[in-house]
Length: 248
Image (cartoon, rainbow, N blue to C red):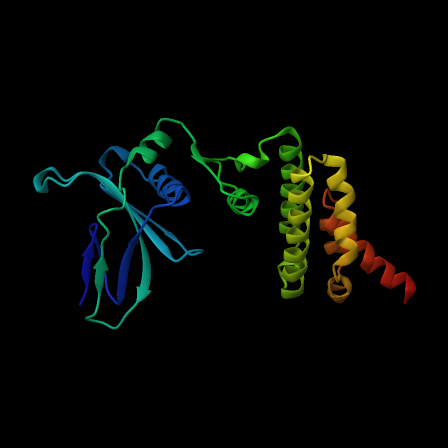
């Protein structure tokens, strides 16, 4: 049996309310500003495939004394006739963040660690102001975080790092770099210390499979797209592949 949720009709699904993340709200905002006659908009929804959620904005309904709000739900498939909505009254559904966006402000996304910082930065969301964790908010911390961000961006530029082997290499590299960075910052080290540590991390990581994958592509465009690079890890992988060509 179909159910009605924030003026939308749905069937074969169950909805469990969860807290709206700022990235959900910016998603709703994008949908909102691309609609015509925004003065008359009563409902907007945004579905996030990455985390399996859907977020609704619903304008106030004066006849029902229902205030405006933003609701986010995890979506689960279910048999027909077993549809249900599980609400959580403790969750804040305020539209204040959406109003901030409508007045030209960015939403401030705080992060608890460098992993979360890089995750939110990877969204490349122009409506989010992603802040570094407090322990990284030093001159050296900011400089090292920028290098980590450059490494992450460089991986995203080449399709070779989207393959399973490439993903494993990327994960090993970033984890190694982050652990090295944390130790350096704890010991009061510098950006130069981190740059030297990056090479030590790369020497320890198994990169033969990554180099062989690059060779298997047998496509000069892969090399053109990836090089030159601001990423030490990308440069290292391609230089390793070149070394295999020379030695072969």
